[in-house]
Length: 158
Image (cartoon, rainbow, N blue to C red; front, side, top):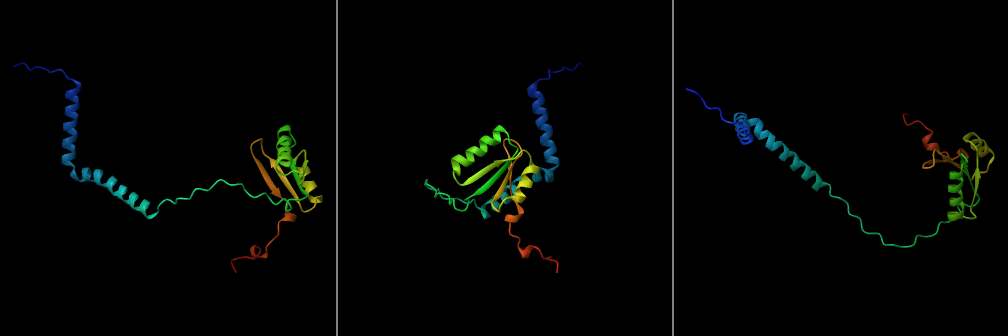
């Protein structure tokens, strides 16, 4: 007796695969239940934790003019910067003329060593600006301006 070979189609393969997966799930009930319950368990804990720590809501801040800066604190401030390039000159000129006009004095230095050497001979109101590139910089207030507290000098292990 000759057997007829049926054409294998997409629907037949899909139906066979679904039947196979159904039989596997029926035979391994414990792992099937775990696959369903563990995500629900973790979802429950996530919701519980989010309810315990609600988001802080801040009120809207009204538009208003800020108070002007007290320029007496910055009087006769010497602002040294390095390296002296066209970009850094433009930045420092904009800072000194637009924001702090007639308050600060800007000085340019060729390199970091010159700025450090000059800071030793300047008064207590000297601040250094070290441009790393045209987008980032580092401010340094030199040691004679920073008060040293004896609280942090003693060892805490005593």
